[in-house]
Length: 543
Ligand code: G1P
Ligand code: ZN
Image 1 (cartoon, rainbow, N blue to C red):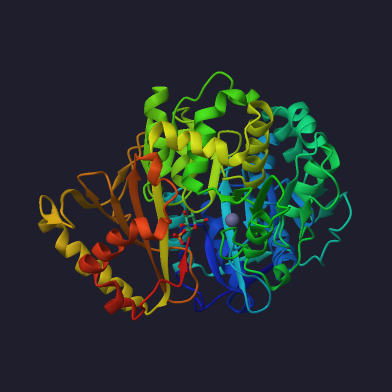
Image 2 (image 1 turned 45 degrees about the horizontal axis):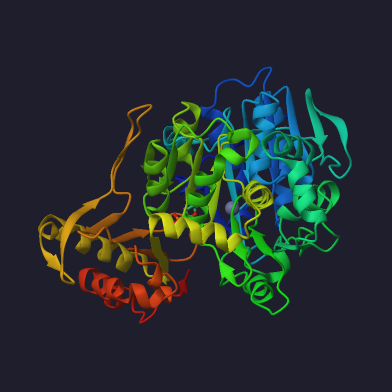
């Protein structure tokens, strides 16, 4: 055991963002940078005697190095046992499932989610608590405070452990169990869905293309879809996790998963397409010649949930992040169940799920999940859609079109302005916030402003308040504009502008989305001087 003292704190103030601490790989490669953060975390957690820690990552560059360091720190902290995924691999939803199944006190996920990987890419670390979900703000804040004062790092001196074969190893007095990364997760999926129905669908010639984007979703999708559910080999493409994700940006949206979109819009397109992100918690669903927006996906899952074995008794409630479209609100109203609106970030769903207030939740950013774990879950969403297609006999696009017919279409888009100088992004938000008190009641774009505020959320379970979660401007017809700055970027600031307009008229459901939203984009410009502050005439990414 060695004690490394830090006479001056080199990395004071490592502040985790929306989803843990995310930085360039080169930042994480600085001596003791990762150890500093993990030690700050271990210092604020209670004693680990007798406890189990889960450890794994999405296999990106630096994963293996980080895992060995964390094992040494965990031994010094006094954990009884660490469950580590074979080869250092565990998807984010699998970490959540393993924590819950094995009664672990928490887990560490190594990932920068959908951010690019490789030596020039990003790396990240996140702590999940005993319910399997991301640490609450109070804990991440305590870690940050501790990182300001940290003076000593406690680490084992043991050499690296071999993690490529299933085994039970020892590190000082701590047991290290190298586990199958898929097994627990696969069991959980079997308990949620009607595997027989999905098997019959796939046997009937229904063709699926799942693009794992050379990331961690691949092994899970292969084992379940090709291995167990009988999908033909080759259904899962880009399936082997690579340290640099094959140079792709493993973010499942139509821009980054352009190849999948091209396949689903080809003349001989398969019946359904899907993609998962770096750590397999995000998902994109695509029908034949039809892209499903994530907010619509959540609404469809909610509307048909009773057809899935685990949700047969109905949903207790649903939740969506504030910038997500209101499609699921309409379904919830129809079902007579509550719908909660939370700030961006999965951690806000944890209390609602734990308290049994909601069963399903989701975000516009290609994240959907339920109370089966405490993370969003990409493959779960794909299986959910397959289950629905199997038991309704309806193709993907029809399920969405029926939603629109019943509730109107929430025409929706997100415009991202990336790499803005942080002070200019802050200035935009400051100016916008300053204008808020004057907006309500004004007429803008021919409509009265029904509400203009900076979203604040009071957690209904623990009463904690999160302020300044994004500026929203809602017009009298329900159209919404939301402005917020990303909490996950690693280069400059990113402004996200979210646009939503409700279209009740079925004859207008197929109008191009950007065209339908153009008046709202003009209004956003008028309100926030987006071009001036970002220096960009167009968003960098539109989804
Ligand atoms: C983004 C998404 C958000 C999601 C988070 C982690 O955060 O917008 O919905 O929870 O990634 O996957 P942002 O960069 O907007 O802070
Ligand atoms: Zn992710």
